[in-house]
Amino acid sequence: MSNQQRVGAVIAAAGSSRRMDGVDKILAPLGGKPILARVIDAFEGCGEVDRIVIVASERNLKQCQRLVKEHNWPRVAGVWPGGKRRQDSVMVGLGHLDNCHWVVIHDGARPLVTADLISHGLAAATETGAATSAVPVTDTIKLAGDDHIIRETLPRHKLWAVQTPQVFRLDIIARAYRQEAEAEVTDDASLAERAGYRVKLYMGAYENIKVTTPQDLALAEVLLRKRGK
Image 1 (cartoon, rainbow, N blue to C red):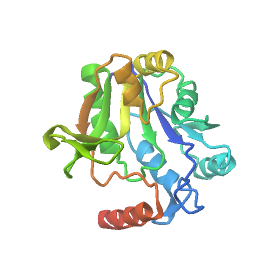
Image 2: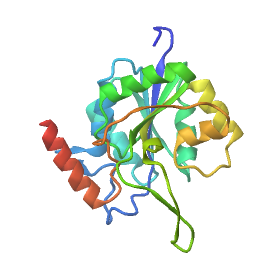
Image 3: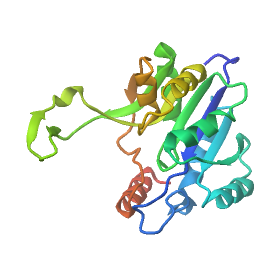
């Protein structure tokens, strides 16, 4: 990254936690720290990131704001309420990235992200202006119809499971959001693809899991202990 090309980060933490048995996953403890705190620590530890914006649900907005105030992270610009859909929340975050050339978008429920993974994404994005972390799938993937009858076995060597961080030139993802505002997607790279941009895959990490269920949280605890943290 050029010194003139400021990097912003949007941490999307406005999910509903429907599958967490009543526990708010963003604030759930992981190794003695809230999940969101572990995510922010990773971004604070990446020297290329200049500004961090957090988008939270209305339900946990005050708690997230309190967490930020307690930790006094120097690069966190603030916490804002998200929208109904994930892309609505990310749009809120993009609007608070003053004077940034690049943006790193990350799920607040992926607490095992590392500063290296963020840096690798920024390097990968310089080729096309858009990049996403991903890992090759290890299972055999079947394509089935509504009747659950297999239609096709997909070639595994071409299949990747997409993660975050996802990195974009800010003008690219902002334009994609304007063009595809009504599209229903589960990640930002899909919006960029739909808008006609090329998105580069870069190697993520199998341990960079998304905490969606209590079982995921238990697995994250095991993975964190393996790191010795």
